[in-house]
Length: 284
Image (cartoon, rainbow, N blue to C red):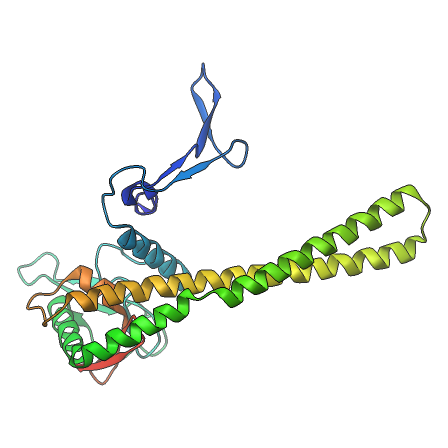
């Protein structure tokens, strides 16, 4: 399923030569792990879904991986409802599955796992839908301010000049240190050096290079984090701009765009945390 969701062809791009033919007669193909050049073509064909929506899917996949828990992906509420007692996600359960009283409910997955069970209540899907619409209505009371704030945050996230500038400095220093290591190795190969002094210098250069490499990785991660945050805010902004008045019916697409997660508390409160960081409290 993840291979389908992550396929760039759905947004109109093409990643060429991900595999290559090893044996034409046997028609054997291997995954290309650097043996052959690969090419990425943007806009090679008509997109099935909007590129922005495809990127939101990638962001959600990564968010769920980072959560470190397995969950069912068939519902918009998967990995979205948190227990206010233990922090575990809610999962759906089927009650009275073999009778006319069959009901699907959502409750804490760890409700009965500990010595003392969680006291958070279960929720019916219809009520979750209604609570979301209530929270959205409260959020929309100051809709224009929320839109302006969201745009300001997105603009700040887009500015990566500091990160890029520091990354360029680190990259240049890495080249210098790599050159120092190479010259030291070449010198040791061409003339007799004190080996203790050679090892001390080599370890010093290598440690310095490793520290720079670690800093470069940190800068890349920081840039990726900002890009993910930008994508989340972009989806939230698109949803908020499209909603001029409170919808009558629940929309899975709108719920996913707008809501980061909702926390269910034992006192009956359900607090929705929206993608822009705003929190809205509702009552069951």
